Image: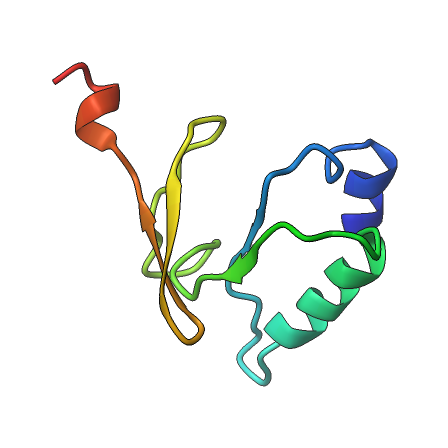
Length: 92
């Protein structure tokens, strides 16, 4: 699937990438998916790649907007927070 995204040119304009949770009942595959993604990105890629345990097709699922501006804040170390202006988008 990552090769398809690359060949379709969808990775190039991305301002960042959010990886979800990749695991089976027997193993966590998140690190393998990260390495595979890095393989498909240009060596000069300097945009953020973050992994969220609550993003993906598993419980608990956290909604994330598509094609909307959000703010990614580094909290220190490897911790990040995504600020999503839900009220602003609702016209409040």
